[in-house]
Amino acid sequence: MIRRIHTGSPFEAKIGYCRAVVAGGFVHVAGTVGQGETAPEQCRSALETIGKALAEAGASFADAVRVTYYLPDAAEFEACWPVLVETFGDNPPVSTMIETNLIDPKYRIEIELTTLAPAA
Image 1 (cartoon, helix red, strand yellow):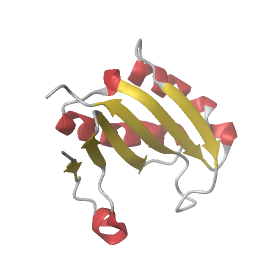
Image 2 (cartoon, rainbow, N blue to C red):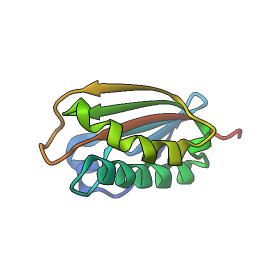
Image 3 (tube, one colour):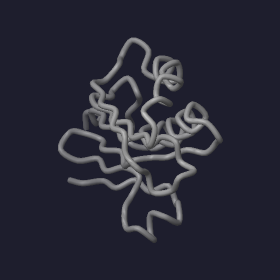
Image 4 (tube, rainbow, N blue to C red):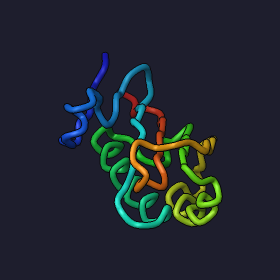
């Protein structure tokens, strides 16, 4: 069984995706950008959006198994580390950081996450 979680963002319909999919024992969260001027501000904002999707799926950051960070400038990643440590605490997932262009130059970080799905 597949369960799709939508946030109501106009981009979901425009681009053809949903924020998260619960399937195969996992919650897969789409790449998520946040609001703010700096990478840490956007990181925190993106994690808030992700956290809401996880809560709707019945999961949390403590269930995270993999996270991928996409940044147009790898030098900005270190400033996000305190936000990530605060978010994941004693339950850090495996992670990868990739330097790449994002859909709009105003975005400084995009976060994609996978967690275990709650037991049915």
